[in-house]
Amino acid sequence: MNTSDSQPEIVAATPENIARAAQILRDGGLVAFPTETVYGLGAHALDAAAVARIYAAKGRPSYNPLIVHVVSVEGARRVVSNWPNAAQHLAQTFWPGPLTLVLPKNPEVPDEVSAGLATVGVRVPAHAVAQALLEAATIPIAAPSANRFMQLSPTRAVHVARGLSGFDLILDGGATGCGIESSVLDLSQAKPILLRPGAISRPQIEAVIGPIVLAAEASGTESRPAPGMLDRHYSPQTRALRFERRDQAQAFMASHSKRIGALVLETSLQSTLKHEIVLPRDAATYAQNLYEALHQLDAADCDFLLIEMPPNDEAWHGVRDRIRRATQQL
Ligand code: TXA
Ligand code: MG
Image 1 (spheres, protein in one colour):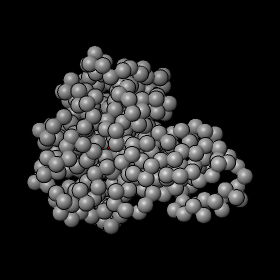
Image 2 (cartoon, protein in one colour):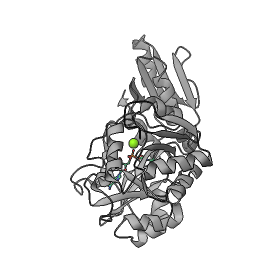
Image 3 (tube, rainbow, N blue to C red):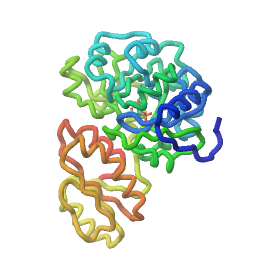
Image 4 (cartoon, protein in one colour):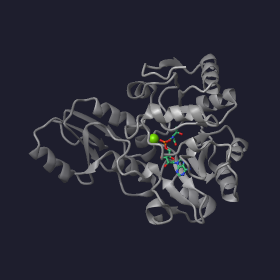
């Protein structure tokens, strides 16, 4: 098992390599693997020592709980102690898929997974490689995003390799589909709370279980904000500034003669930018490409990055949330 700082091996996600990865996980090692959202860094969820290695590799604080990945509703029911009707309806509608449900945890799940909380986050991923790995390993897999704490999430194997070390293997399954992390919904309290917006939107969830509350609106119900709600998160190394109106960005560029990179919607902002990425005005396509764009811009040797905010509507909620955490207001 590789617990040093050496680079993990990257291998194609063939059936043989998935079997090998499953064995590493069963033996207490760590494997990075693709899900439909971002790459995860997985460990045997019922092995406290293995889970502790995730925190070490990521430099993640111990108060930040992990999501447990399972292959089916039956698997989910084994890691929780209560399975309410709302969970059943949501699972039937959205699993496999990018929705994490937070529920009271089964005592078998080590405190390392839940960061000492009485609840556990659980989801069935929709990616074929993640599913094959869960099938082969026959264990629940605890997996946060496979990036160092506070840094950009990985949507490709190469992002994982560049950002993280001190674990065993990376299964390369190509670029992930959805591109931003799962929506996290807390079902353990009196009212369902959306702790983290993601690909499954608030209206989609409400169509199944009725009104839910946004974490921002639910202050006071929890002693500590959900770790995914940390203000700065998912950030590039380069100083990144977001803007809502192009005249704000133009004014900034006029007064800063430095090397500037930009991520904008639909049309170019300016021809003199050191590096510019233009993404379409379509929330799903944008989400799919967001982290790759930020990784590219971060590697482009700029002094500042300017990020154009997409429209303020439900379809863009998850994307706007990630951009807000990655940037400061211009
Ligand atoms: O799409 C995803 O969710 C990816 C892939 C790998 O599944 N995973 C991911 O994990 O984004 P991570 O660790 O980067 O974010 C998990 C978030 C935490 O920030 C935390 O807010 C929330 O899920 N979470 C997990 N367990 C929780 C719990 N018991 N109570 C409240 N929040 C929890
Ligand atoms: Mg993360």
